[in-house]
Image 1 (cartoon, rainbow, N blue to C red):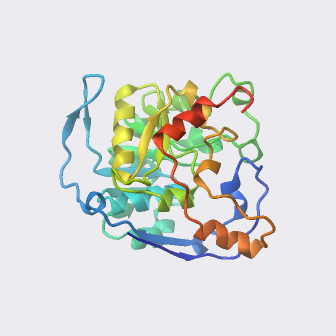
Image 2: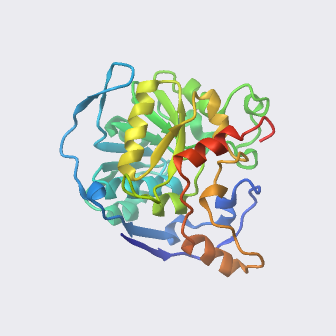
Image 3: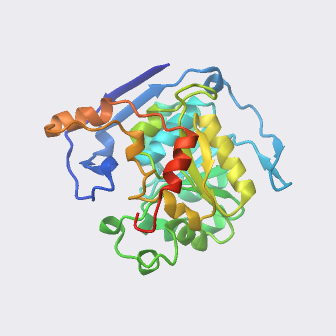
Length: 301
């Protein structure tokens, strides 16, 4: 396994709360380059055809060959890199137009192309929605109808503005997304790990230091698809329940971000903190540990 060439611009403090240790710096997306190779038998394999497999609910699902991404920032870029390393095709999109993704497409190579959000939604066997929550109502409803949509979004009031239904606990952020995408199958995933650890902590199935991520959703078949995608990308999955249960992996809960990061040394300068963030390996969090952390969530988290 070989890892990580990093080039980063100067990073400055960012006004997110302590529940967002992954966003304590301000990034210029055009000046941050993350590239890595993840070589294993699993990730060198190429998926040459789409096949139907049995789902836990008795239906069928398609093996993911093409992953659509609506949003291609830090989390989206990390997922795209893992997907290409695993032999998947990716179709990237953002709110600024396909031409703005030329550098990322060039980095990812022949298995990547850019499109509009509608184009990425239509092309993907699975689709990852990884935009700020405040933009969830701009996800293309018609293009995503009938699709399994992986929701990586979290509610950050400082960024998203106050949403009464979320502040009151009436809905989770994923339930809000599902309400917008009424004809899609929404599954929460990738929302509790920072992009750097996500990109560099993937491991082959059976590796002693393979980590796990929680998922949540209302459709068992859709969750089956996401479990298999995570396995392909290098992670075990822990089903923590329905979209209502996804609150147990939201910001401020025990399983959110911190377990995947080593303790940060005290007294670091801004430059040292930047270097620490990018260079420090992630901490493997096993499936059993994820379950323990999720079970430790209280109504105050």
